View 1 (cartoon, one colour):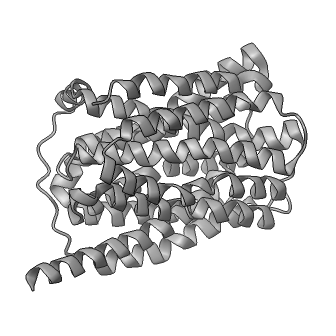
View 2 (tube, rainbow, N blue to C red):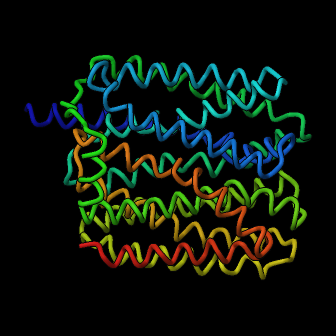
Length: 389
């Protein structure tokens, strides 16, 4: 009887977290695809890159400090505090027109948003069983990736002029209201794991000495690198170089992101049964590299053609995402807050690196052919994947 009760409680927590990550994902992806276009309205490409870099530095610093806060205050208080700040910042971006304040709010938002997802990771890891890691991560990532299918279309419909970005930031803030209510109602009595005292230097040293964890971390970083490159430069490329408008770009992105809904749950179940993330990861990286390498040779303004090529690239990305998540979380526990923090830092590590590499590549080969550079970088993932055991 107790076993049944425990399983019901676990299922309820899982369903609550799935709804939570869906709301949080809507909040994030509403602004995710428009940030670079919004900033390009009053910043040069170099200035925009600098803003992303500063935001990434703030986020990395916060990730290093989070374990200490978790030991003192707990995961519940941290996620509530960060969500409240995130709401205030987004309302600020939506309501003011003074550029320095907008940039300050934007940098803060870039710094704290990934940590809210990190807090959900701790809830999920503490509340679920390891035997079902692949299946649970597949469901979790599918819910997370539902919103990018819908939000580009919403953005395309709302953004009829370049002066209406404030509407999107307001909508993003509003999605945080039900998310915060769910957290307040369901996790107030959350029992935190015993977060160990973390020596940052030792944690990083042990992390990089843990061969499998380090190699899958590199794979996940390369995936984040791909996402960052695409989210900053693909909308600008499609609008400025190919000639699409935002409504057309929204349709293309929505179609392109469908693989995250189609493939991640089946792949997670396969990896639970076969335990062969290694081969799946290699296939994913090869698909990403091949599809991205084709981009410079597609110059036609064809909605169908661009949707297909970006759809194929996301097939590879969806495979790599669920495989790296499954492999990593099979090797760590909720108590490994330092490891999870480093793993989640990959997103903003990429925002630290991509603007610099992309700017240099653009200067050397031009925006048309700098996609080849991204394709070659994706092949590095194959090398690290072959080293996994």
